[in-house]
Amino acid sequence: MKKPLNEIVAKNIFRLLEERGETTVSAKKKAKMDQKTVWNMAHAEHCNPTLKNVEKLAATLSVHPSLLMIDSALDNGIPEPNTVDLLERIARLSPTAQRQVSEFIDMWERPNTGQ
Image 1 (tube, helix red, strand yellow):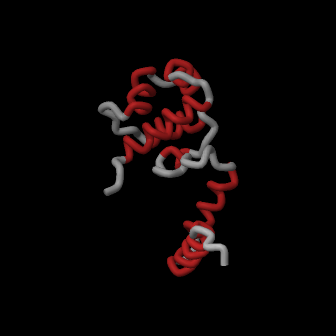
Image 2: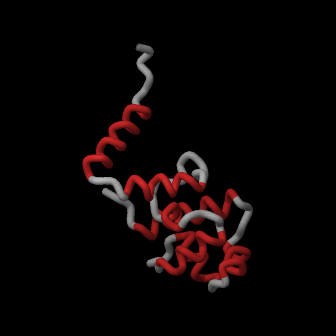
């Protein structure tokens, strides 16, 4: 079962705040948002984040907004900026081409069997 979007956004915001040494107070000042909204977004409390708020916080944290909404986007650290460009290019491909890209990535993720 997939996580709710507010939990994904919260996890990613919280991680970025921690990694950057930011607090919800410092982020709210930079994003020009209410501190309670930023705190709620970072803790998934009664939060249904709007795209506008996600975009504001993403800009404050210097990441593309889509990275805040993808569950595993930050699992290996903060991706290079061109990663988002690559994702957008893949999204424009036909379904067949997207499947081929996925199969190619699967090949790189398979454990090395030493063959």
